[in-house]
Structure formats: C-alpha cells, structure tokens
Image (cartoon, rainbow, N blue to C red; front, side, top):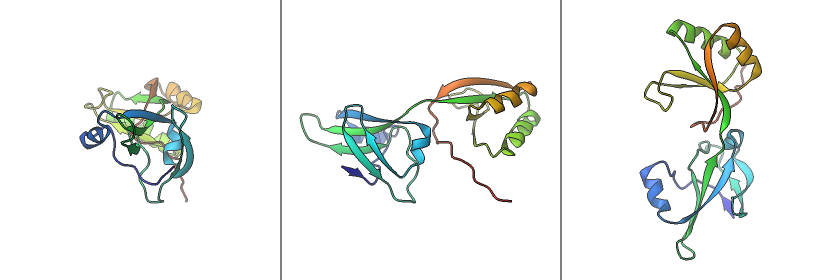
Length: 163
C-alpha cells in the first residue's frame, strides 16, 4: 500500500469522526521522520506501507490519518504517533533575557519554537532540541531551563542559511 496524502488528523473533530470506532494501528515516527516525504513505514501491528507525499505537502503531525478502510467488523485506521523527543524548555526572567537567549541561539541557526502562557507549558517559553552546547550556554548565563521529553506540534528542521 502506498500513501500519497493524509486524510485528516485525530486531534480535530472531523478527523476523530473519520476514525469513529475503527481499530487503530499506529506508525511511530520520531521528529526527524516527520519532514520526510518518501519513506517506508511499519505499524505497531506489523503492516508495512510506503509513504510518498508530494513535495508541497505539509509535514506530518501527531494524529495524522494515513489510511482508512471498512473491512472487517469495525474497519481499520492507520495513524501517525510521534515519539517524544528530548528538548530544553527555556523560561526567562524578562523579555530582555529571552531576547538575548533567542538572539544567541539564533546565531547558531538553532530551530526554536515559542509558546505562550495559555499553552500546555503554562508560561511563556522557548523550546529547542536538547544539545549539550546549548545547556552549557544556558548554564553559563544562568538561564532557567528544564530538560523534558515532549511530542512537539511541529518538527524541528535543520536551518539552512547563506551570507
């Protein structure tokens, strides 16, 4: 079976309705695999499938529905399940401190994601992939951070640049 498009996402009402009471198989992917357009996948039940998404397709996300059928008693669904990744959740004492940290890490072309106080983090934070050199930088500047395992809503991408 070759998958060429996603059918919805279980985190949205319409996607949850598509799944209904179907038997759900999961394809576990790490964050780096979410940006790959062509890959071979295997579900947690041993079913193999190929992924061939168009170049302009959005990155995969946790809960994306890859396959649906009505075979059997209840039917089947195959859904993306993103594995947690080790991240640093950085909180700053002030906007000045956060600007300094963001600017310094940006100079390293490090991808970051920002979340507001209304997010699952409960405060305004910057989240980056865990890296020992970033931890050293944060420790040196006495910035508050926590190492956590998180399923990120958007995959981290390598940041290409030119000067």
